[in-house]
Image 1 (cartoon, rainbow, N blue to C red):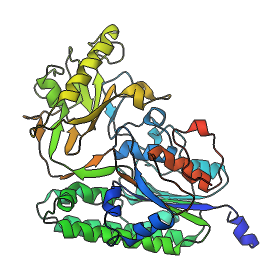
Image 2 (image 1 turned 90 degrees about the horizontal axis):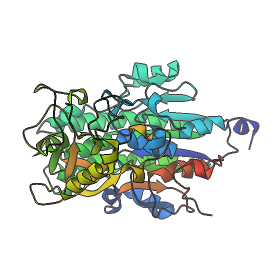
Image 3 (image 1 turned 30 degrees about the vertical axis):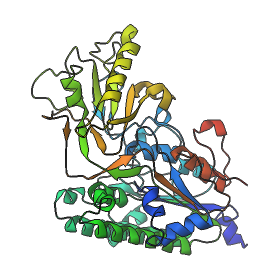
Image 4 (image 1 turned 180 degrees about the horizontal axis):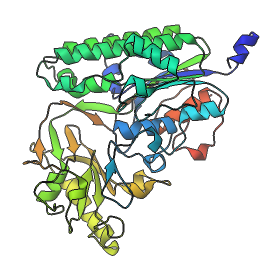
Length: 449
């Protein structure tokens, strides 16, 4: 090894992580002839289904995956969180993530990290080699750093996200055309910067997989009219990851993972409408559209996905449930949620998790009191504008699942068994020979030598 290689840090093992947002392991593992790259990754290294987190939503999952700790430590519980001691809500962004990111541990160890398109990372960090933020970023111009990186992405027509509104059309052709274009540009950018070979950690995410799943997953799972279009898209994903695998140097381990699984969607469940019908929630006026509009006397409210909060005295501004009644009221709501059935007679909840089971850390003061992990087929919504019915349908036919997320590690010493999302960060750190304190993280390394 020459001096130049040592200066670039190549005396240390490196990792390339490729995220495939929302891809269920069963989709890939049940079709080895369609997806030979994933089959080879499982055969040569290790592949398996892992659990996501509570709740299994991308805005909470990616901070957990990239830190190795639960939302009580990251401070991010979902797409919409509430301010402490207030009914005001906000959309969490990168600076709201309170735990140490994987790539910050890499830079603290004196190594370099390229980070591309990870959700909940806007605005881009300036302590990294290069970063372009992902989901919820306004534009490449504002989402990429440094300037020369931004300029190259703009010149090549890089797309941060697919136009999801196109998926609402009955004809999915325009949506799938945009999905392919987004995927192609993402791959082109990944290939270019992987080829620069100047990083120790490359961390990039294909999020278009999640978008395609939301609008075509039922077609795949139940032989719908768009099944071929769905499989064609995933054949390309497999091809692109195969190309990436082939181009990586020998000192780089490839890790591929999703943040949650996916399943077909039968019913949207409007949780605040249900609470209103059951007498748990009321509003100050008929014209209401936010959490701030709930009325005195309300006992509970919900935020997506499936998070339920007791309107507690001393915690909420207009809390109506006394502290000494909290456990009884929460227990009553939990029992009602566990008994809730859909129009097809199926239970909505696979299980209802109390906050003490899922969240711990310095930022558990905004944790939901209960989280419903739904059975497959039920997507939990929590708008405040009001719906006529508790159960309905929308433009999406696929939904997130807690189980059946994907993890592949191109290392024969990896063992993916009884694993979850929290195990990915410590596994990458061990693969890179970066020290960490085991008790700092909620997961454990999956490398066994």
